[in-house]
Length: 341
Ligand SMILES: NC(=O)c1ccc[n+]([C@@H]2O[C@H](COP(=O)([O-])OP(=O)(O)OC[C@H]3O[C@@H](n4cnc5c(N)ncnc54)[C@H](OP(=O)(O)O)[C@@H]3O)[C@@H](O)[C@H]2O)c1
Image (cartoon, rainbow, N blue to C red):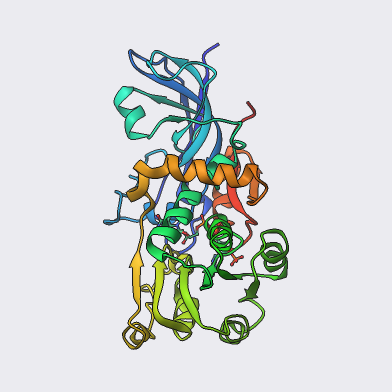
């Protein structure tokens, strides 16, 4: 019996928070791989805040997803048919598989999708979407290369319980820094301190970030890894030290704005403190991912590093599951489970 591929396509460019009606659910028969091609059964998908940006018209670091196209997403899966020289049926793989059950790639598409084997002895499928995957690499290289933390310095990270944040804080701890997270709610704050070993965590939903920074960063802030932008960025800018480094990783508080993005009004703190603020895009370190994966996998093996994923079941839940990111309802890296192995 021919396999059927269920897919989620972008139906409309959302205004504000995406709605179910912004998506179309379609199905089509699964084709066979041609010469050099490969067919992947998608097992789990990475749901990322960046997806919101890809739904907008306009120029970014990659083109938007077109109306009617299958939504772009990274994932992990298993090769079910192949005439590709490198990939054999049964191999576990990662790559840009999009929001669908099967991903058929010709040789050129496999390369562009970044198809690569994953080793489940190094980490579970969901860890390959988290600490060993794109968010982990963002945190690892963004912190070490752009943030350049030194032992004894104070590192603050927002979105601390999320995918990128949890790795940033743990890498900074391993490097000998004082680490203060910012997260929404007591459970997330308790998790990053008690489970991940951060020195403190500020609950921005129940108190003043300014007071929290005063209390927990008595020596000021040397590195701020910003995942959220908006008011929190503005507040952290008032506490930075001379030569501080602010890593602009993301600004999730602004992604669903229907008004222009709110930039920091306290930016002159950069001048006063001879500090710098620098944006990062993880793909710039693509050729160094194996180095980051090897190091984080080693820390996991040695029991020095933990990862938490929030796995939601079912392709049909995609619209509501994606929105969990913007409502702070994910606790750890948000993963959509598409199929059992
Ligand atoms: N530059 C790059 O190459 C790159 C690569 C990957 C990710 N990123 C960026 O990194 C950031 C984190 O991504 P992630 O995958 O790790 O997501 P995540 O932190 O796992 O999930 C998003 C979290 O953002 C927080 N949030 C949502 N709305 C907020 C708001 N209005 N104010 C403050 N916090 C809010 C929520 O946590 P709370 O419950 O704590 O509020 C939510 O759980 C995003 O901005 C993303 O775009 C950038």
